[in-house]
Length: 151
Image (tube, rainbow, N blue to C red; front, side, top):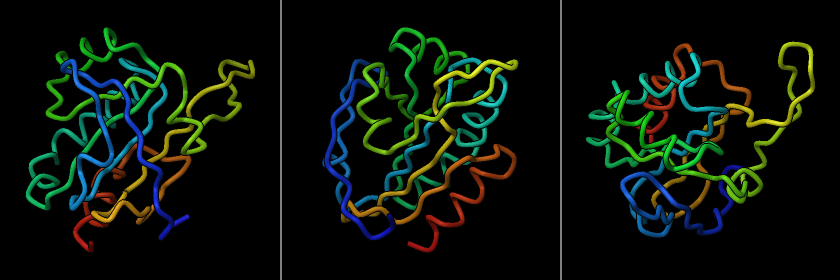
């Protein structure tokens, strides 16, 4: 819910780092949750954030991608796609639960539990500024960038 403080969290991220929300106080944080490394939609979405990363940085924003993939998988995906931002591994689904992004989805006619593509912008004070759920990839990174410009 926009305006609500986001509970601080720490999670393992690429580059052998730990991503802590509180480390980015004073900066907007863009957390985008995606289903799986190296899949078509997730690759396109990551590339869209990558291609706009310099603009996010100019605005003082921090971008991070989150999925349940392992750090090893993330490191390969990040290197292959040349992402300038960290990917957070949420294998234990703590962040997924905190942001309520796990849904039952249809995959080839079967019900599977997975991440609903969602993006959250947390402002410099640590409050949720905006959320997008059930994201369609086309145009999304640009829409998030336009929103961050208003902060």
